[in-house]
Image 1 (spheres, rainbow, N blue to C red):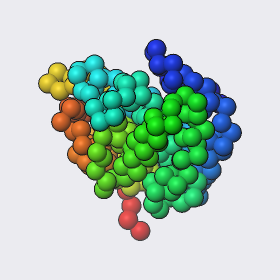
Image 2 (image 1 turned 30 degrees about the vertical axis):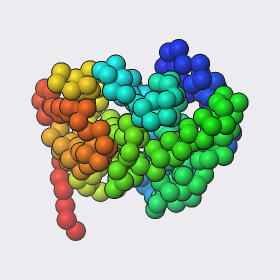
Image 3 (image 1 turned 60 degrees about the horizontal axis):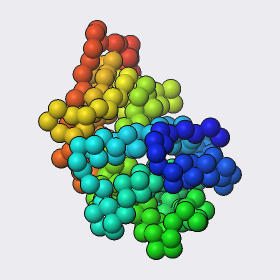
Length: 257
């Protein structure tokens, strides 16, 4: 499967991504996850497209934070390198939703169950045994911590949690508008047109959300705000949402039967 991220000079990450592209097990788990979430539950995509989007978002968020002086937790706590923090964020992003292959309920815990052999496969002979154990622990922490109510302990886990909430462009978030009668969830999701990440003015990272309709505020308030506030790294982010141009009408009529 084609799957590209900006590797920069991270040789370990390049090796891992080559293995990701060749991992049949991982690709099938993504497809199984999508069948449960999208086909059987009428939720939004939780398969390869979602994974590609949030992996790229998470890596960009981490690099923006590092550029502004934020030290990754694996560097501070375990004396590993910034490149290893990138590996952790990418692996956690790749594996955070594979638990959907088992069930939507408690999928975070299910992902933690399924992830260890995949982590071992993807980092084998790239790290020492000691470093492998550290990487696995940090990746599993980030996977588990993407659950709404769980407070991450690390910068890397916080990044993955926020990235997961930022896959919201063009109606991708939560329940698709086309799944049935319009609800505030589906209407607000389709109102989000663009998410832009850049260095912040007052804080390290600026998240700019462009909306076609003010209903998009519900999406931000109901999903992004909560995950950001419970990310452990909210102090590094500024979030701006705005409508540019004329507000687009999404729903012509709403009927209660």
